[in-house]
Length: 597
Image 1: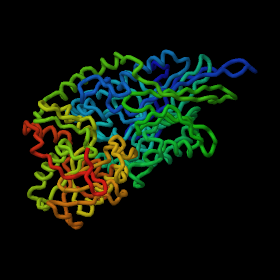
Image 2: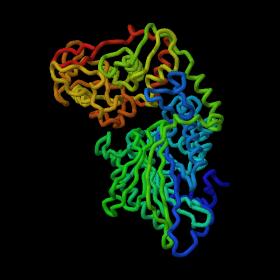
Image 3: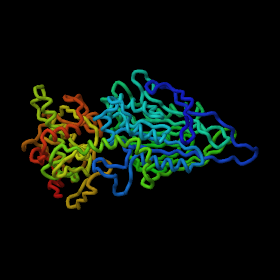
Image 4: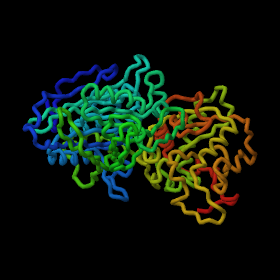
């Protein structure tokens, strides 16, 4: 069996993904090299196409709007678009083509959620839509991203078994065996030219250590995540020793060198550091940061080699293309030039084979998200939720508060006030006046978080709010208020939290760390020693975002998905009326004066 790019699937030399310590080596018999003595060596081209952060997008479809996807830049999304562009480039190529993905594949759209939660593939035996789509495209390897662990190891392992190509993660280590829990790398033998010896391309996969925090409930005691730089330093020499002529890394980590979770775990975004510190790497395809980096060169400090880096944005909006020109000299392959760019998938029509492979699952998801769950008495929008108290965020906090309060009735914690935390995940979410559908609720709460609760003191609540308030830039008294620039661009919206159950002011004329100028309940200052039960999502409670005082033993942890709780609450009542849950309890001020929007 051969793939469209001529790579044979014979000679798979690997154990199962659960216990593998050896690589996969995919190849076919080598052929002779360029003939003729004294002639200039012939140049050959290897093309590597890369995707990342597709996040469950197959169709160019916005399930929250029930319409074809479109944005201000008129980007398109989805594996079907990627496949069309890949097929075009394969047809045009004069040399071998490899296709890689840098992770975050099986989470991120209602399509992916449906087959993880509503009809999980672990129960139905159905093939995952992202397996169907990616198998049509014929990838050569995929790296596991942190979101691959969101639904637990059984679903992840089943998805991997459904793929027609290896899933890589060298730095995900089985706690039981001490060996890689997944395939660490592959070496692919690809024919080059008509007579030359096969080129051996090593592909190393590195996943994100942040999974140890973000999916602690799914991986703790089962998988530990080692440093991406150290893992590259371990495996690259092994790949070279086993004959890799070219070494590529597919890494689910950005190139900024910083982490959202601080120093508790190895670096979240170390791609440029890997290129700089680990000799023997020719290029790195990376993801996780959702940025478009067409081409970046990083100088390796040991060898002086220029390492090529590229990141293809997110959701299938871009495809990375890396080109390597090679010659055969003295029995060895040598890269003479390398370059990268990113290509826009809005330049092609979606691949019909991918669309056909996932059509039934897509249609089932569309029908599901268009079910009506309640009627809203008025239009509720999340557009201004970042900087002013809005009913739609209070809806989240109301449901979380009610759920935790009911769950703790009759326990030792029943007498404590229940506070709740929510973040403005979406600026475009709307509950329309009239019928509210599942897609509207899913558009408000786009992540597959579950609900937990911990006990915090008044002092911890204040420290938490101070940390959250760093989201805003500092505005001097009298300075104009530009709502488009009111937040620090280094802090994403999902790392800004608002509380319900306490009343507070955020004074953005004050320095970070001293912005909570009022913290009260019923007009009385909160006692630093007072205790509260705080409803919070599992991402935040497990350390996501690095918020203080929240990583502690839960007093409520039944793993109920918050999005489903929001749907169930609306269905049970039939009506969403802000009068039932909206309380203005916080505001932005400047030098003590409320800011009017």
